Length: 102
Image (cartoon, rainbow, N blue to C red; front, side, top):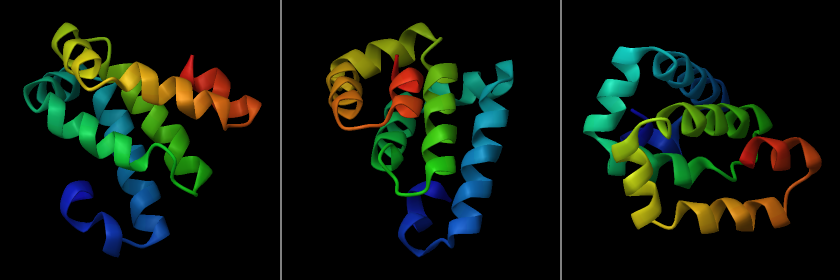
């Protein structure tokens, strides 16, 4: 849903969906699923990493933190230069989000 309907979702639906995904990725099965579709998940998260809704950004950061605990997802992230993206986000974010990106 986040991949196909992101542009047409209401703020509430987007916030709810990202919160749900974050909660799912806190569990082993959620991480397992994200690991199988690692690049797709990372691409989607990177599209939302600078979203105007602070809650969405917080959930996206939580999801990244959770799924990057998996070796294959970290490898995909390295291949996609996610570290550079996060460092760039740190330069233009307030203190609250800088701490999340670390």
